[in-house]
Length: 180
Picture 1: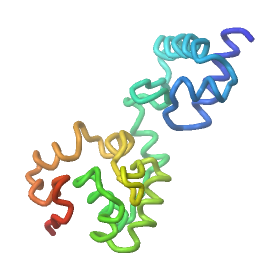
Picture 2: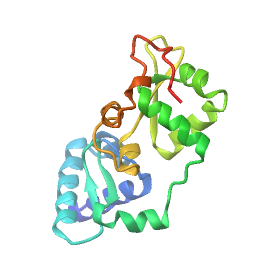
Picture 3: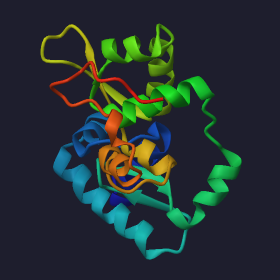
């Protein structure tokens, strides 16, 4: 397989998955050595950066094919992400109290929080990992959340800037109430 063919296969993987992948994941999908995948990926990144196209490969949290920021307005018009008010409120609680235990989120937002979490996971706005006891999940926002809302910095920093940090629970005080 030529380098050009390998780059085309990597491009197809990035286009199809639509999420950030580590080089090891790409190598596994293509059944090649990670070193070979990495060399071809670097060439592919150079190809994208040397042309004036609307797409780029970002490598901040893995490799992802995405629209360049200067064209994001077009994508937003064509593919808006609509959040229902209840889901948006759940996402707000997650962002302000992250990392937050899913059981605590349910206490704050009710039983519908489980469906909201599923929807937000599917949209890539949050991640969920088992806590150290394995009894609940810890939930956090993702870079996609920050990108969608055009945020710089983490949610707690933003909350302090906006002077709404009084309701943010400390990690050792999980029962703190959100101010309405």
